Each structure stands twice: as structure tokens, then as C-alpha cells.
Image 1 (spheres, rainbow, N blue to C red):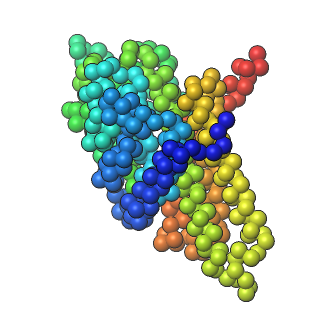
Image 2 (cartoon, one colour; image 1 turned 180 degrees about the vertical axis):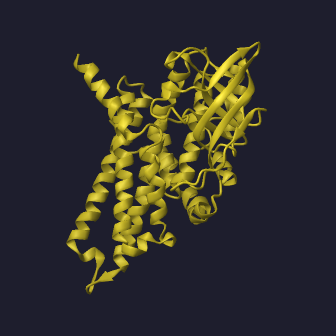
Length: 381
């Protein structure tokens, strides 16, 4: 077990922290207000290796570990959880191509994905298939060398602003065994996008429905064999859950730091806020919970790196715990700011809004409990 970072890991984390402080944090409130998708800044991050963090080197990836990725996404999220979360989604979609694609597919798409010249979205959720992802209905019917796609995806991050869609579609019968994965050019005729959703948070990345109406996609764009798409989607989500947990912790750390600074300056009843023991205890509990969640995240990331048989369960555990903690810490930080925390200029309410969705996406935290419970029950038999 690892309880301290080595020199290389510290350097990776500090690089991402410096990038977040210089390139992301000064603009985060404006991006949120203007619903601006900062593609140019994300491409700058890619020049530092953050466009293909755990992609193999032969196609331009950084070949780092999931542990390294957790450090990077937490650091980026100190500047803006929304921007960090989208970069994590792009990395997840790219990893699916790296892990399951042919040599031709990898060399066709990944060099430009690693530089973020091409940007990818992950398309699993549908209007009638959220937590029950195996019930998805988007249909891909074989027609010679193409599939003809019809259906709709919902809540797709980056949709309309990205180049490639890594989509789970039904090529066979009902259930998970009938699902395959296709890489789809976003400009394919028959592919269209809904309006940018009006959301509570995550405003610095667009979220749209993706519609397929007789869209023709080459069979050559399928990752792996027919019927393994659900396996690909779930494998991607193990890492995605770690990434989104890291984003929660980075946002929460910034909220905690802002609260500490505010408490040193604000006075009430003739004393600074940080001189009241009740508020000191609140601050201490926030730091304790955050450190516990970070330690849990590191454990799960290390398990995924070494392909531990319990990695899926540990990723689910870390996601449930870390995203709940992240939101609660940010919410307490807002409370410690009093009425000022509710004002957008302080930056706390944005973090609260951004982190709330982390308890829902990449599998709701109720589904995380289900994954853990099933593993425990199976192990007891």
C-alpha cells in the first residue's frame, strides 16, 4: 500500500495544479456564466500529456497509471471541476479505443485524440435507460459494410462540440449480450443533437441529446466483436468512477481552502470565525472526511492499476464515498461563508452546483451500493 507520493507523482500533480491555477481557475466563473466550452484550454492541457493520460505511447499517449490520473484530475478540478470532468470523459472514451480497438483503429483516431485535435464523447445513457444501461434501445442493423443506426442518447457530455462519439448500441437481442460499441463521426449524416440542456451546474461543458436517424456507420468502426459493448462500457466506467471522484475531491479542496481563508478574515460577535470552537470542529471534520476519501481513492486506483479482482468493487466504493464527501464538504464551506457563500462572486456556490451531479453520473451512488452489495453477497456463498 502506498501512503506517500514519489517524486514523479508529486511532479505530475504539481504540473496539473500549476496549470489549473494559471489557465483554468481565473476563468472558471466566466465559463460557467457564459456556458463556454473551453476547448482551447483543454488542448493546452493536452500539450502537457493530459489528453491521453493512460493511452499507450505508440499513438501519442502518456502511458501513465490510473493513480497518476487520479492525481491529475483532482489537481485540475481545484481550478474547475466541470473542465476537469470533461477531460476525464474524453480520456475514458479514448481509452476504450486504445484498449479494445484494432491497430488500425488506434492509429487512425488516437494520435489526434491525445492532442485533443479530436475530442470524444461517451454515449451510453438513453431516455429510458439510465441506471439500467443494459436496457438501451438504440439499434444498429447490419447493411453490408455499414450499420444503420436509429435511436437516441441522453445527457451526453460535450455532444455537439465534440468530433467522435463512442456509443453503445444494440446489434443483437435484449440484454447486455446484444450490445456493441461503435466509434461514430459526429458529422455523420443522420446524426443530430438536441438543445444544450439548462443544468444546475457543469455549465462549462455542453450536455445534449444525440439522435440517430438512419445514420450509416462503417462496420470497421466497431470496437472488438459484436456483443462485447456492455463489457467495454463497464470497464470504462471503473476508471471513470475514479476520475469523477478525483474531480469531486479537487473541487471540495478548493471550497475548504476558501472557507479557511474566509474564516480568518470574517468577524462576528467580536471574534474571528476561526476562533469559535464549533466552527473549528466543523472545519476539522471537513478536512478529515476529505483526507479519508482521498486515501480511499488512492487505494482503489492502485487496485485498478494492478488488476485486482476486487477493483470494480473498490472503484464503486470510492465513488460512492468520495462524491458524497466532496459535495458535503463544499456544502459546508458554503454554510461557513454565510450569505456570501450564496453569491456567485465567491465561487463556492458554483462548486456546490458542479459537484452535485457527481453523485449521479458514472453510475448513481445507489448503483454503487448495489455493485458492492452484490460482490459481498457473492463472496459469502
